Image 1: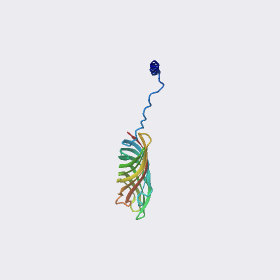
Image 2: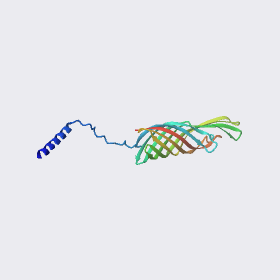
Image 3: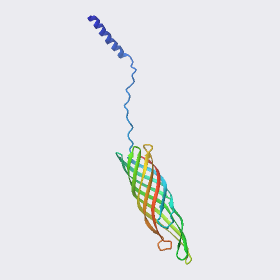
Image 4: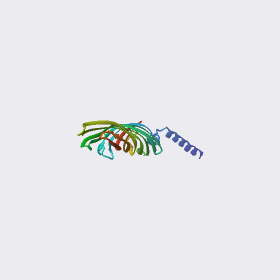
Length: 228
């Protein structure tokens, strides 16, 4: 009986050793799944922007159809904390916001036309946003300034023709809101509305063409940014 048990045991050991020597068909263990890192809005960025601006002077100075395009460059920085994003953004835009020739009259049967046009505009703004993955909803506010050039041509029966021009820089604040989406880790696209109540200026003081001009500027703008 002992011999039988010993033989069975030896056969089992030999079979195990033989099986251990056979080649295995099992592959290497699968690599653990590592989800991609979450997108972050933190970082510096530069970009280009363009849009349309329009304003009403709240009186008849330079007419009430003052509008035109803007295009320029943007620089900024975002810092993300959880789902909240704070940042700074500044831009310089070439501007073609202008008023059509406006005809005015003054005592003594005098008449004339005036026009208003801009050359460039700047803003410096803080931004506060809420990030939903790659989508950022934001509000913004800060400083705005725009360069304006006014000119007039007039005629008076008593003095004959006369004309003049004047450059003014209109300072003011700016507020707005928008949405931005990151198509890749580096490329984002945004759309925004901005409202800039700018200071009043007096043009052509001491002449029959004298006028006080308010500029409450509304801007619709889009932009593409590259985030470093």
